[in-house]
Amino acid sequence: MSMNIEEYVQNEIEYSLKHLGDEKVRHAIKVGSDIRGYISEFLRGKGYIEIPPVIISPLTDPLNHPVYDPKISAYGGDLWLTKSMIFHKQIAVQSLKKIFIMSPNIRLEVEEKSKTGRHLYEFTQVDIEALEKTREEMMDLAEDIIIYTIKKIKENDADELKFFKRSLPDFKKPFRKITYMEAEKKYGKDFERELSMESKEPVWLIDIPLEAREFYDREYDDKPGILRDMDLIWPEGYQEASSGGEREYELPRIIERIHKKGQTEEQFKWFIELARHGIKMSAGFGIGIERFTRYVCGLERIEDTNPFPKVPGKVSL
Image (cartoon, rainbow, N blue to C red):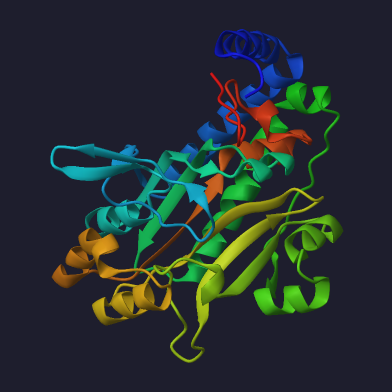
């Protein structure tokens, strides 16, 4: 940091005040608020129970890409800020059957991610999980959520859409599907961006290789190394909208997958102990609220969806 701390704080306060005074930001925050409300309304109508988020825990998502991962020692143990509630969802759903959370996630991404316009190191996703459901059933639910929410936005957020000069399409089910390997072969290494740029509607990316994902998602029984996962890709270059899949639930497979990822049983002893008690299959996904808002408003940068955006590499209010 080239400037001294007093100058940096002053600059950040001035930025925050200017940011919150921006009419574009105010309209986007309204859209994000409504998206939360419409999604919650839809899920409650389908019998989903909202549970409170977990902010700090000895067990959180390992992720499959590098992030800074600060540890807090307290009460004789180690705690981490929640990168996602993947394990807590799988635990809670055993009793509650169908759940969702407006879940704050903290992922201290490397500074390079600030260039994408799609990354914040603190964001909210609606996190959804259902017991004894398949990937296909959850994809169907996600499509319904997207279609319902956009319909409600078009009905109730006309002023915001007019401000952004944004005309949203009426998406139809089912959304197009393409496997990870097909997409990589057709579009090359940057296939997610290329797929998104050419598309006029959301596209499912399915059957994701094990090395591209975490240990907890379920492998096909007849296709080793391929997971029953899915990502939903926004059109028009906005890229990832949602990510999810079916979960591993059998103890031997969980342990095998941990080893395949080069991780240790000690890292996930809490989850392994749960699996020893017996858990049933579940499936779920998360939808990033800020990314949904960015798509709806047609924004270049995700910072404009959030009153206090946390941009990777930058200490912010």
